[in-house]
Length: 314
Image (cartoon, rainbow, N blue to C red; front, side):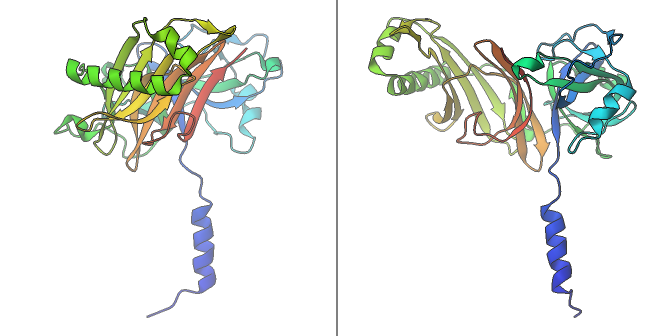
């Protein structure tokens, strides 16, 4: 048997270890057959061309006020290390969260300028058209995008709902909802100081819960209790909401909680290799944004691996 030199093995291992992880980006519905995607955060430093063409705002929130930008202007940002090198006509994959992967083609280069002086990022990206035969699959507003893979296409019809990562449209049984609400209420009682918990005793919280499947077929719940009391203790606002990630055991089990944000779960997508992506939007004071994270049991959104974000703050 021939032997491979140890140096070759070492170099191969280093090359593999240094390979860049696959990138993902957030995308939103722009109109009937196009989406908008921002590839990179940049600093325009007030250099956006005065004649940049204003375009219609996206129908979905969270992608701000894009303008059409010439390729010659965007080119300067594509030279920076780690920048995505995109161009008109390039193809990417749209992860719909419905068991389908749709090919999209970049048609218009765009950017949105933020208040950079307060520390915000501006963004560059593109509008992308969906193939005509796939237009009807755009019944959600938020998606994930990855670089195009040749095998992209519509998969075979699934045998059961858990065959792909997605949000379940059907409501949970009332008995399950009641158990989840009771669990979160008890957790809030433990987390809140006694003087704060006293303010919630006579307030009926708003409750919502969503079911979703992970890429491995496991069912999970995302639930929110919002007392909405907006009261203060010692002149300070207190947290009046609690969100939880739960597993549907015989008695639903809390895996992690969100205590300082009020995130909305917008979509659940397959990232490949058994991984699940969550698309959420959040608001905290005058700040807010969209996030794409890789879901992990036992972690809250701050702890889950962050794959992409579009955000702004005051």
